[in-house]
Image (cartoon, rainbow, N blue to C red):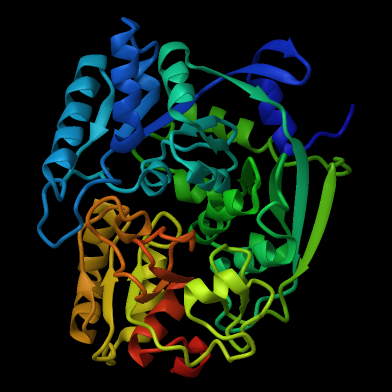
Length: 457
């Protein structure tokens, strides 16, 4: 029997038809929607007189245009409220379940999919959002789609796709103190660039990946698209099964036993051949921080600003050769589908506890879901942040994408736990530095980019 990769196993199990030249029609097991792309897709399918084929295989949330201001119950502007209401109306008409504002299940789609057990190993999962690759952390085959593809999924529960090549990245060694999942994936992107994964489905493996809890694996897979990859995946294991058991949409009873037996067949076989393989030594990494306008513009916090991208330096207001540590910051954002889960908030709170945000810094903490917000408050994490001078906000995408009234002011410098530091991503002329939650919290307290290891208790 030929050895197969996890990707090949899952892909082959979902082929409906071979269309030739490497293009195949795949069945879509799970579909996630949010109001920004979902509402447009719903209106398109309605205008064409087509019904949603399998509404039971789609769930939705409200995350992109919702305001995260404390106590907010809608959008931040009339157009946003109109979009949200249209999304609700069309979802009800189609029979699609929406987890609405203030409900257990509302939050960033890439946070609530796993949280609800809607994301399962071995499934194909799509969403009209580029960071859908996040869900590969549970052994799902997941990627982002555009509005026309979203409409196709709603109408047919299938997707036409070119089969990508396969890549495995082996993360070797034990990460040093202060080095997190976010640092591992930023270091990988820094090494191979934002085009390093183009045309590939990437499997993350190695001792450093296996040692991560599910939330850390979700962070790693979230940034797969920032390396240009179609998707990123981690083979399911006992941590995956323990994470999923008992969740709302996860199988129950005999179905759980059947599913578990199938999931255990998914990991890549010994001797499986990948089209490309890379190794990253994690043992010598320092906490990472971006300096430019691409996720590949990343260095250790103990490093100096490179001089290879003059336009990026000019935009960011940095000088080549300067130490990145000590750079004054104005804003800190802890949130997004990358780093807004409960362990992320715990890590940031551990740094903030008993300390104060620098007087010139405006710092926000935005939980990734309604449930995470409730659980964090039950642990008293919100009070730690409030006592330190952070603003504790409602669940949503918030300042990651800046389409909801949450943005960084022009030329203000923000240390952010999100996934993109593009020009204007967090607001016109905003200067973004990507980092882990602990690094972001340390920057808020110090008032400058700083090595989180100096804050260790």
